[in-house]
Amino acid sequence: MLDKILHNLPYLQIGLVLFIAWLLYGIVNGAAEERRIKELGGRAARRKALAPYGLDLLYDALKSAAKNQVLEFWLRTLLTYGNPSNPWTIEAGDGPRRVILTADPENIKAVLATQFQDYGKGENFNKDWHDFLGDSIFTTDGEKWHQLRQLIRPQFIKDRLSDIKVFERHVKIIFPMLGGNGEAVNVADLFFRYTLDAATDFLLGRSVDSLTHEQARFAKAFNEVQHIQSIIARMGYWNKLMPRGKFYKELKVVNEFVNTFIDDTLRLSPEELQKTTKSDESYTFLHALASYTLDRKVLRDQLVAVLLAGRDTTACTLSWTFYELSRHPHVVQKLRREMLQQVGVSRMPTYTDLKNMKYLQVCRTPISVSLSRTKILCSTR
Image 1: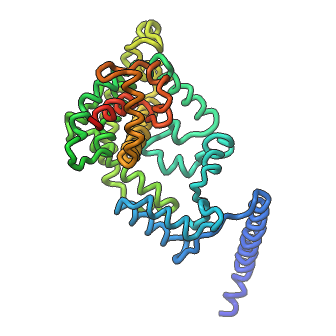
Image 2: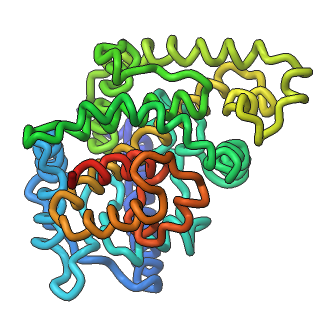
């Protein structure tokens, strides 16, 4: 027995040396990281974990999402663990990664605007979202992100935004669904369907018509993929443990729908691309894509990303806007007066009208101001 131990001693020594080196590396690297954090202002208030790696935070976050209580959960978490003088930023455990959670307007402004170049999405974000959004503007950094931004930007030039007939078409469909006789209406669901219809019409040239076909397969699949993706994102480091069978099943439906637009893009001839300018009414995002690439995967990623962008942000903003308007009738009255003075009851507003309505500017919702105009005019009859 002793002979065997002596025979293996060199291997044990090597293993011990490697362990000590790994331990020293961790200590030195940790000390260096703490020094860098201190130089940048120090750590934020810490949320005390009740389970290893902050698994209790993950459990609470997922539970609150299942109950539609995300806002209440994060407010409670920040106010409980944040610094009393400014509770809107905390640190929390998420596996081996350092996680900073913030709702501080100055921090958000730094990340999204003034120090945008310093805050990339990173490899982990791209990996977590890659199945859904691929290498699109939402998952890339640096030069690649800049190229994709330049690709999407022409879709929102003044000449295209001023053509609000597209949005008015879908307003006429959603308007009768918004109630008006005191009944409860799930406007969030309607707005998600409205913005999907308007986005596909405005950006891709034809609408998915989910408002008139409530069971539209693509709309339901898109919703389900987003729902599961949100859980994947919330799980952070641990999302590799999540089953994805349902996710991939619905994602296949989304991809099959998007493939029809990819085929449309690939069918655009060089002559058609040359004669169609960005200000033409027939110009769509497909023309921009065909001029950028003919790679099916690249086309797929950009189409899904632009559908997500055109749908979610506008629908959420509309939902919150109408919620706040319902709680502040004096704002509705003032908006209505301005709109009646500028546009009247029946005329469709022009781009100039929208720019001239200053009070509307501070209450506006992106893209869908015509919907706000129609609803507000009629909500106080």
